[in-house]
Image 1 (spheres, rainbow, N blue to C red):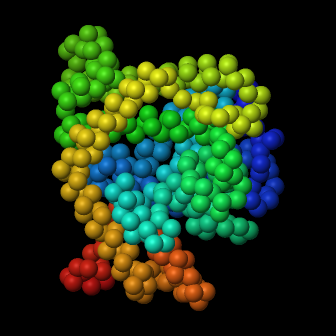
Image 2: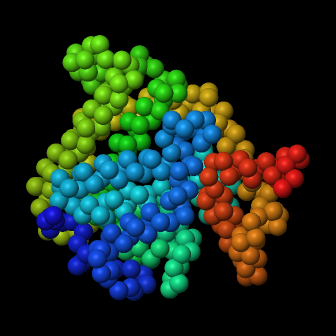
Image 3: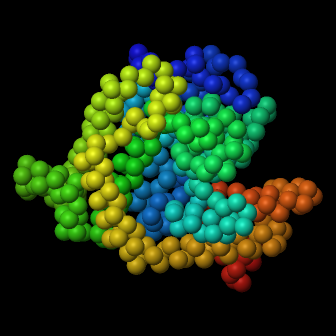
Length: 382
């Protein structure tokens, strides 16, 4: 496929932190993707959920299925805009690697526990995972991904943290944009989780179709489906509505981004980076519809008492595990005991806390629950 001049090109890649020979039968971005798929962190996404806890049912989406859905949308968008599909897929598959167990509730709890040690942010943790925490290769730590993949993984970052990240943090200091592959994956992520949370919310009974008819994007597609298929059963009706909602947003994103590209006329990925705002975004109308959908999900689903109960339990588990491990590192897996011992030898309390956070962030939902039981439940003696 012929790439547009503003797409990421292997020939102009900023390379890897540790030099490697170019692969014989793959591009560098394909190699990045393959390393992510084979990583331990990627496999664990199967047992990390977004809104629900993993054991609540196997019909709900996990971080793994979400990442695959984002990758599918991202490749489709990249193909139409003549962007680098392999890089888009790489970023999409890696974007959630740093997520804690128990979704956003787990992240908030770990961030609160780490408030005296620099805080915790899943986006930074995703980069930390591919840069440092994966141990698979003899010649370097992490996965040694290309700059462009790492740039796309780091969607947002404070100036304080950016100053510690070297090349990949410079754009936040210089107020630059990432490449278009990163920009479009970010929006594909938004499309996927909003619309699929609607699906999971309906499946779980947390929200109803009648409630969703207050949301313009849903109502618009509901009316079309009802008119075309008045006898359709509800399950298929919901699938039909949601796929059309997704298509509506993707088409709007592509059309708006094409118009922006026509106006800006970037001739390289660096031209894209120098723009004062992202070139990939929704139309004003779609932005308003998306905000309405987000507000609905926040008030009607994420604040539902059943979700709040799960979030409260998740917060308790994460905070109790963090405190226990920080106060008594001998409770940890021996591998992390050694990491913390090395930190303590250097007198680094911050490093000790970060190692505990790394351990907890890497847990799946069910592993975190099991660890909590082993430490705090007297009947579990192993």
